Amino acid sequence: MIWEEAAQGFAAMGSEQRLKVLRVLIRAGEDGLAVSDLQSRTDIAPTTLAHHLKFLVGSGLVKQERVGRTTLNRADYAALEALSDFILQECCADVARKAANNG
Image 1 (tube, one colour):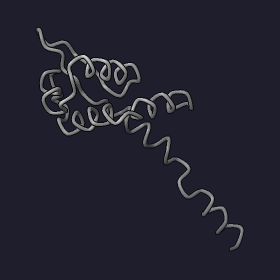
Image 2 (tube, helix red, strand yellow; image 1 turned 90 degrees about the horizontal axis):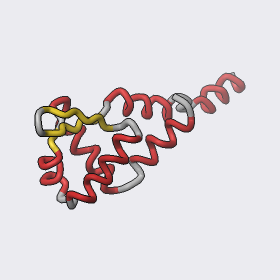
Image 3 (cartoon, one colour; image 1 turned 90 degrees about the vertical axis):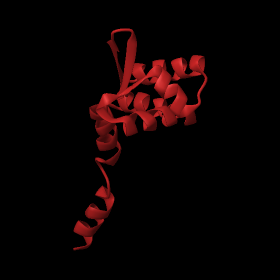
Image 4 (tube, one colour; image 1 turned 45 degrees about the horizontal axis):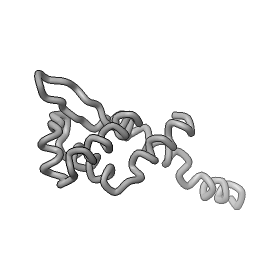
């Protein structure tokens, strides 16, 4: 993952309402949720929810699939894992280097 992709993903989660939507989708699992179900679980107005979903889909954190007349929304677990790996990839590197220099 490159810095620009990571920044875009983290920016997408930078809104309290988008973070709420994402967490609800994560709880729903692979089955995902229709927009109406997502709206009832988040209490976000439909037009505002549509705006936030567009942002989350655009950043690659949410996938949408048309099933008949319903649009299912799912968290993209691979994208979320990549963001987690990106932010944690250098975890404690300075501590290990310091220990190696002192040892």
